[in-house]
Length: 445
Image 1 (cartoon, rainbow, N blue to C red):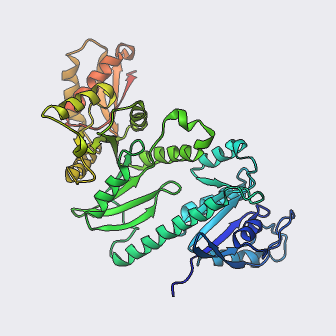
Image 2 (cartoon, rainbow, N blue to C red):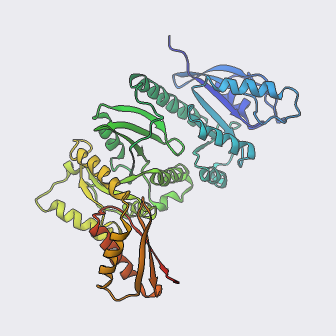
Image 3 (tube, one colour):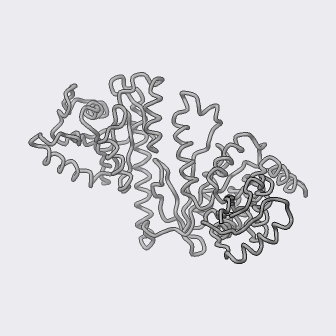
């Protein structure tokens, strides 16, 4: 018989752990009062909700003051208990304290155990915006609840079932692919971004499942982001699947706090990625929402590929692809250098080409141009424009490539001159899809 999953409930004293414990069990097992630190033993009970069961352990408040005689023993027992858990519930009851910041840091460092973060005592959900935004700044998605009024408690168990199921799936796949360790570094990290229903999850599943080399799902760089690792042609690829980003107007509504957290996680996924696939829905019109998402990619200067998904559903003639490309280029002038591909996650059309282009783009994104060749080219290009004098150019960094132009009369280099040099570098060194950073500094020598 399969053992029940074990869940630990922890947080600082008087956050309401024992009350939540009793509510989930449907009975009074733990002492509850307004006096901090009443729980001294680790209580356990079986929870059965919605046809699912798990063992819930109520741990003592881990922020016990050092002067209490039993503190070392209590803390030792509580920390030892964590080692055997399948999931954790971390309960907060207000703005994070120093203790809670330390707790968050610990679980970010050690991601072996999935964590569900819960904010208690939200008796008036409409007034909890500032609290939720503070946790959002920490990169956490917290579930607002009120144990006293039973508000939103069901969301806690739903989240638990989700993370427990994900962990069980990871462990099963790790057993079947034990030679492929999560500690290995990946060759490429890809983020898939786009508006809701563009087909991001379908693309993720098509890229991983059809390769028959799915390795594991690992916690990503942000809360509740599950990344997929798989091998393709001997290369190890990590794909970050992001939530669809809704319209900015919607994100400002009170009901959209979870979506604002998704927005934050998506921006962090873009930051963590080597390559970003901006997924467009070929079956619908390009929208301002697509432009906003593209703006996030541009802002972080990430190498990007534009993939029009659901191409198999489009009624087309010999000019459809050409017309779609022209329409995109006119609406997204800042991404006129990004490669465009027309794919179908459902049929697998051009998915191999998509991965090939991701690796080729990453190679271009990581280019290091020899200084001598760069200066020779820049001096030749300078003769084609009337601006200040370029004395010397050097590549300061890569990913993305950044170039410093030391010039005379820097104020003579207008935006069109800077764009001229950017286009010349991209054209000469075949940097399609690669964002460039150019800096012009006055040469004082």
